[in-house]
Amino acid sequence: MHPIKLNDILQLPNLQNVKVRFNLMFDGNWNPIEVFKNNQSEILLNGQYWNYNKNKSFKVGQIAIGLIKIKSNDDLWLLFHIGKVTKDLNILNGMGYEYEVSEEYEKYFGRLIVRFKNTSQNMVRNALSVMEDCVIEQILPDTFDNDIFPGYDKVNISWAELSRVLEKESWKTALQNQKGVYLLTDTSNGKMYVVDP
Image 1 (cartoon, rainbow, N blue to C red):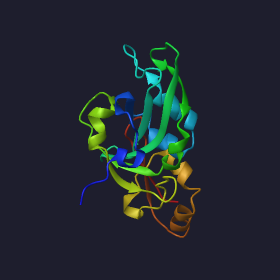
Image 2: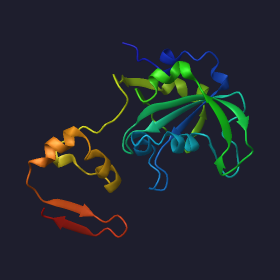
Image 3: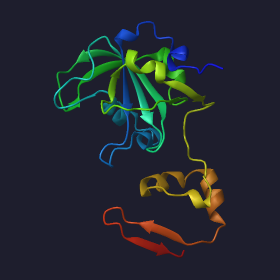
Image 4: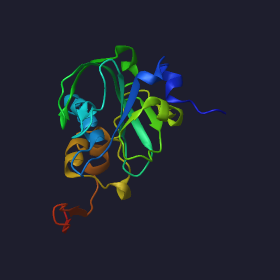
C-alpha cells in the first residue's frame, strides 16, 4: 500500500510557488500546539508569517502552508493554515506579511496530521524539497484537541495546559472521584513539591 502524501489531499498545482513553515517550540516558551488548542489563532499566525533577523520567509504571491509540531518527541505535525502572501511589510524580526487565508483548504485546518522527520534547522522550506516526505498519518473527524484524559500514570503537563484541560469533561470525570498525591515541579528552579489534597 502506498502512503498518502500531503499534496495528494491538497492538490496544490504549482509547488514551486509554495513554502512550508514547520512551527515548533522555541526557547521553551513558545509552544504553538498549545496556542492552537487555546484558540489564539492571531498569535499563531504571527508566528507563521514571522521573518527572522537576516532573511525573509516568503515572497508576495507565494502560498504558505503552516504545520505545528504536536509533541516535541515525535514526527507528527498538524496542518493549521494555508494562505497566500498578499503584501510584504518589509519587517525583519517580526510579522512581515499580510495574507489571505485559502478558504478551499479550511476544512482541513486542525484535522490533517502529517508525519514528517525534520532534519533541517531551517523551519521555512520550499515545498518541492519536503512535500514528498509529508505523509498523511490521520485525518481527524473534528478539530484537533488532544485533551482526552491520558491515564493517571501519563499526566505530565504544564500549569497552563492543566488550567485549560480541567474544563474538559474527560478530565473532570477522571479526577473528581480519585484520591491521590500530586507531584508539582517548579520549572523555574526544578524544585518538586508533593501535594496531598
